[in-house]
Length: 468
Image 1: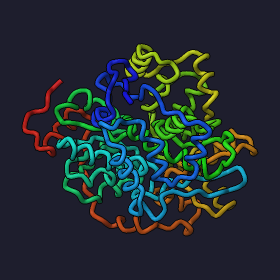
Image 2: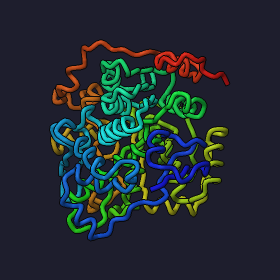
Image 3: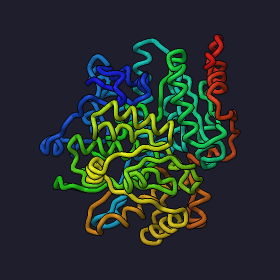
Image 4: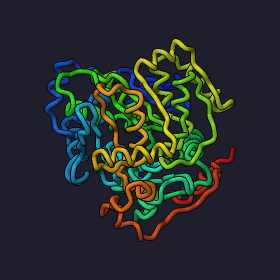
């Protein structure tokens, strides 16, 4: 398997280089040159597998034997999803004949991102030991990526981890999961700005000083993050559909990584009908599907903060897949940076809408959604899952089978949820144990020079960071 950049600057890139580079040298995103395909007979064979077995079979063809030998990679998959991952790896709540909730919050940080970042951390550990190198991880988080990256990658002594989060714009629990983690190689940085500012700092850092710091990415700009998220689509499909009929997935999303993973599964042969893009008030994705225009607006704070995003990085991968035109992609994203806007023609938009449905939900409607499902089934969901649940009920017919992705445990947003279900919302031990722990983080301005100087000092790099 070889990879190329969505902007045309690189091709024939190995899995190991994609893993270690994160962002392509031309500012684009890496994408496989082809995708494994599963026939109906293949799917029937996969349907009987455990989660770690399925992980190996679904993802093994994205790398070669020279990257990680098959037996070594199989062991990584089984080590990742063993009892240490959580009491349950994954499960499903059946709401009705047609509605199911996929609970993706059993990992160490109680969020769906654990599935990919625990795998990514173990792959990093193997590659770094094999190559005898050290790595600096730089990531931005709108809430859950940060703690999942810290818990997934900090086991390796070959990694220093720097996580940026928007100051006062993640939930208290999300922040404390990062800032109470005690490890001398982990650095949490609050940025005076929003998530898009944090994400831009990370991308600009890679473009200016990536090689000097030996940087790697844990955001979903890193292809291996997407790869790790493919598995739970396959697993959940086999649990709710036995006749290989097409079903729908409803995905709350901001950065487009989770729903893009579903799209890749459909390309690989999983019988998926619609992928429902579910937005909060920061509805840049929904607006795109309505109009064909990607237009940046100011990010608004909501009760579903992990989706408070305007620049959906992974959408670039989707546009490339539909157009296969690297020049077009490069021009579109140049316009997005310089003008805050780009648009596509109606023919392309209609093609995309064959696969994607979409909707948005206000904060008030989100709270109503939490209350509705609690009264109906006794299940407490987090605000992001509530966005998906309500939109799925709106855009899909009642008789259309669907899976709602529950992206985090409600306790990560305990204040919001308690406004609706009162004392029924309890904190699990993983959360209650950190409430009174001492926090450690630094506050920086939204300034690339300041960030580079900070990382240089913490990484013990004596040379002055290059000015530009």
